[in-house]
Image 1 (cartoon, rainbow, N blue to C red):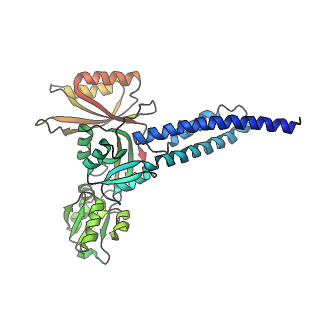
Image 2: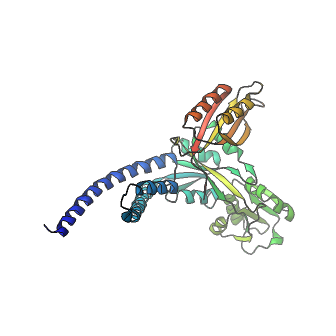
Image 3: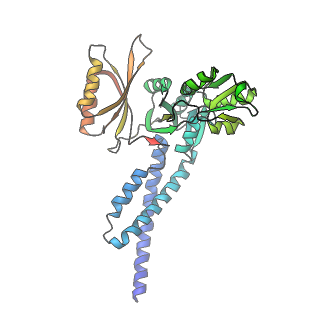
Length: 362
């Protein structure tokens, strides 16, 4: 047997073994896709991909081969993601609004393979997931200029869903009108209350009257249907294109850094991981002196950084409140377990709404 024949036998043997391991890997990828669909997690995880490549490349002893193996891994990961995208093709993501709403735009950025399902309002989108009609819901929780979205926070407190990821998206508001409209003709603007708040000074400068809509895309749709030159909508460039409107003026939001934080809500709680360094909690404190102060102290005493603490009325008792807290730290370790144990002692109710690695910008 020649050296060439021996080499080819070794290659054939290695290829057969790699084929067997490839099938085993793709079986695992299928399980990953099932998990991501159930928990509302996007396919791309660039941090983990780089960790896989870095860790596995270190297993290659021959430095001459290492760069080739890294390319091999990248190709394998790309194939894995291709299959995940195909498997997630039937995923359904609920959002509040109609096609062209900011939530619709962001949902398609995060879940490009899924079907974005429009819902009448935040509650309807949330309920669509609770009842199994959709796999997850994308809902806004905070705007950098106009503050919290209280209705979504209330759904999180009273509902059964969990947060599996938080995403920040830049929001650019535009003045939209039917074609042929001039600025001096516009007397009234229609939009979602958050959008009206983001553009409050612009609206005041122009002396516009305001009308609230369920969301910005609905406002654009209404303006298109009415066909009047005295009424304009505030919304996205995508909404203008969809409903055949023109942008009278762009970037009319007061803050040049206007962004909204969206949370993905799912029926299944994401399995805690040491990579998850952020968490969201909801809690109520006992009606005794110092209870809230003690709860906040407990979080800090165990080494966790409290990034935000917000209160909302429970609506069950007059002047009774629940608290929404966002923090930094790993809840899976001993410190996290001890913190939750001590927090339960000074609180009447504690719910870990979700954990995630970091906030993603989309």
